[in-house]
Image 1 (tube, rainbow, N blue to C red):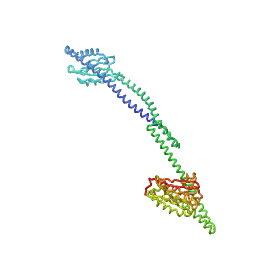
Image 2: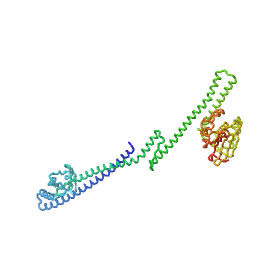
Image 3: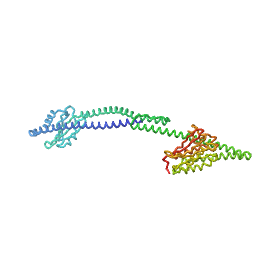
Image 4: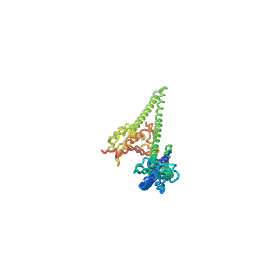
Length: 476
């Protein structure tokens, strides 16, 4: 069942119960007031009957005490005959026997015996009975005449009072039905207008769940529903952003696996081919040495690639322990580490430093700059110069590496930090590279909350640097 139908049903039930309860008590009160008025009138008539009969009966007893019952009949009949109003009968009982009965019509009403038989002298009693579909009110008073009880009872037709209440009840039921019907229509329309934005939100959510990630809700409401719609749109935007990130991550992982497989396949093919030649053929000594050299060279390249891959994965999952690092000592240690590999091509590292301190993991940062300098070495010619510099800036300390080698074109700069990406694959493989050095360096720098920047011009060289901002900087 839809929410709007539940709201309509609940409101109509509560409305019906509320109006019905109020109407019930109002009708009941009106009936009680009308009945009390009838009882009051009936008792007043009974008082008048009693006082008149007693007064005239007293004169009769004083003048002629004999034949009292006969005199009582004539006297009662005379008094009753002169009464008008809504009386339907008058009964006089003396000493437990009916003395007179006068009715306004030909139908004789049966007077309830329990009314006069239990009557008490000096008290008024009344009783309501139903006979032939009509309601009658009997009022009784009791007097003592010659030590015997005389009961005077008058009957009053109060059917109209009950009919009035019944008409009010029917009218109220009809009115209640009309009110409930009108309220049902009004509540349904109002509920429809109030819940329409929720249906709009529901449709948008359903489309989003079915794959329509551009589905959004456009509501101008400023209430809770409007706030919910804004929250939904924000959630959908966040989900789409995360999905794009996840898709990019999946794509990078797939590319990583493909590149890794490709990089492993080439040296493995060379190793297996030369190993098979050594195993299955008789070769000259110089050919055996050449085959073994190829196997050794490719094996070393696999080893270097596996070590860098291990460092790359290790860096992504390692928690950085920040420590104060002297920039001077740090650059000297890096210089000492790269001097042997630069000597292979007679290259010179020019180091310019500043007196400052940064915060970070010294070993990881050394690994990052060693890889950056190694990349500069591969891109530079024999006997060239590479600059390793540090300088103070307005917001921290800048440490960078500059070479004057082949440079990198704009199209390659966008992917230079991707895993296994190489600008010149033949040159990189010749130099023993696997496309992981710069990726590892960028990952280490990012783990320190900084960014590895790069500028390059084809034929002129490349500059890479990191600015360690004030948040990670402590002056000596």
